[in-house]
Amino acid sequence: MDFKQGDFENILMNAIWNLEDSELEQIDVSEVQTKINSRKHSWAYTTVKTVLDRLVKKDMLERAKFNNKFFYKSKISRENAGIKAIEKISKQYFQGEIEDLIKAVAKVHAGMLVGR
Image (cartoon, rainbow, N blue to C red; front, side, top):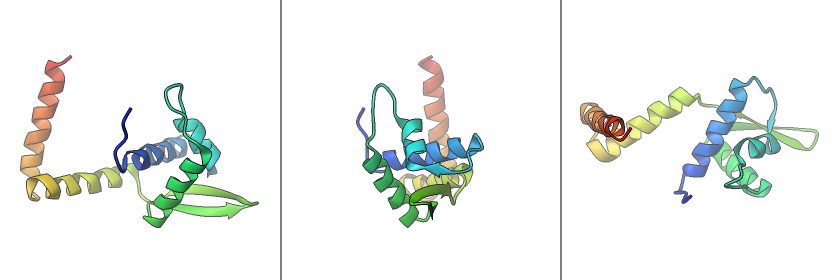
């Protein structure tokens, strides 16, 4: 599987949100690593920690240290992150015209239905 810039950040944010949804109160690097690793791909602890720290710098996560261990928590909800992504796509590809973006989404959705 090829990953583009930002894909791994999205994978980690989804892991954090899913862990928070499961009401896990303290989320450390190991918890996130366990959540995202699979038979197809295994991410190194150092890679996960580096990208989590990058998300802290981007103000998407907050980090707290307790007993020489770092814990992470989202600073932005999944919904708000999605809204920001939609706004960005709208500006990048549709000159800010949400209606044009919605038309494109409808075409993608129709294509997905045809392919089923």
